[in-house]
Amino acid sequence: LETVDLAPSAGNLQAYEIVMVRDENRKRALAEAAWGQWFIAEAPVVFVVCANRRRSAARYGSRGENLYSINDASIAAAYLELAAAALGLGSCWVGAFRDDMVSKVIEAPSHIRPIAIIPVGYPAEAPSRPYRRGFKDFLHFDKIRVGV
Image 1 (spheres, rainbow, N blue to C red):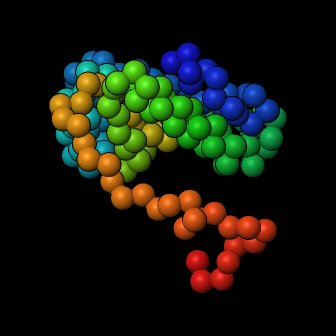
Image 2 (tube, rainbow, N blue to C red):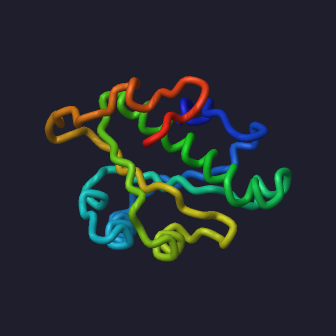
């Protein structure tokens, strides 16, 4: 989590909250909220990364509430996954879930919005590397090329 603390954020506000879930009942409830993605419940620890909309809105208004807080939480979640990988841990960013159910599980107030559920643990197997676009397919010079 020290790596997450280094993540950049709008105005250095760190407009995110991270809930570490170890309770078996809560992990099962998160898996259910994530449309039955049961591997969530099997992980030793699950992180729920949330945007703190109020924190960002206090400085940046509606843009902070609706964009910057989500960006901040997303960057923090990415740093969390990179740090886990560097430690030899497996993780999976889960973005498909019912916000209201996740909020209830973690007892989040209304200004806290769940952005990602990230189960973390030692991988049971070494996954094969999925296909990735090469940078030549997404890097544009000076403008977006036509037909994208």
